[in-house]
Length: 149
Length: 149
DNA sequence: GGAGAGAATGCAAATGGAATGCATTTGCAA
DNA sequence: TTGCAAATGCATTCCATTTGCATTCTCTCC
Image (cartoon, rainbow over all chains, first blue to last red; front, side, top):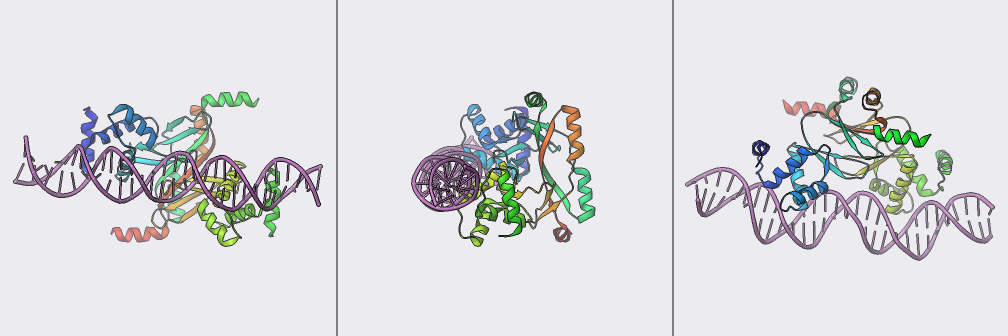
């Protein structure tokens, strides 16, 4: 297989997980994807790509990966579906365009100062957060503004 | 009924919705609740309180309220359930304690500057956001730290 | 390299939150 | 008060996710 799979093999081993082709395939797809994917999206892509896989395997694998912190899980009010993405250990958020449904990744994160404030003010120790920002992307802004006039 | 119901009556009317006892009851419960509620939590509370109501009515009512912007909808990775709260039109976020599962409301919001940055940098117009912060609350921090030593 | 143990997978069925179709009831304007 | 549209109840369906169990596969140890 490919070079990165050897990489993943070690990662899985370190976490006490067995290396299987399904797991490699899922990791690879998540790695290639620019935005978080639902279990079903992954399932369809996997069917097209590898021999065959069962949807429950996809769910179980994603669950295991999430518990080992290899994968991050997020949910969206929008359609109620849960999405998964590789934990790149770099901090990232997504902008969601309510018009064209595009997801845009950003590196900015405004939580830093708030974290300190919360610690000082009410002794709350922040360990993580989800931020979901929605609005109009560049393209849709143009359309949106034109229609409004 | 109570004074605030007269209030709600006008609100509903303005939005072109009929005033019913179920709607008042739901609004009242949401008003009294300190944290967002699931449809089912509301259903159980309503059953205990008013004569009888159907779960699908709860869902439909919350949906209608949400579309009229009287109610805000949010979802949590935690249990995957959707929660509803009254739209108080004041901006608010919640801290979620991963240890005791308490929800704490805060008024701080760190999105302001980011909003401007996004507009300038990539012409993204933010219209809304969800922020979910998790960590250890004051009480659990004490326990947590003691155990860690 | 091969056997054995335990983990991973496939398959089918179950679960559970949410949505829906339709008959009935209710709110409200005229 | 009456009539109509909106709201509700009830039963059913939908659909994402989970689960139990039999089978297959990985990996360790010899």
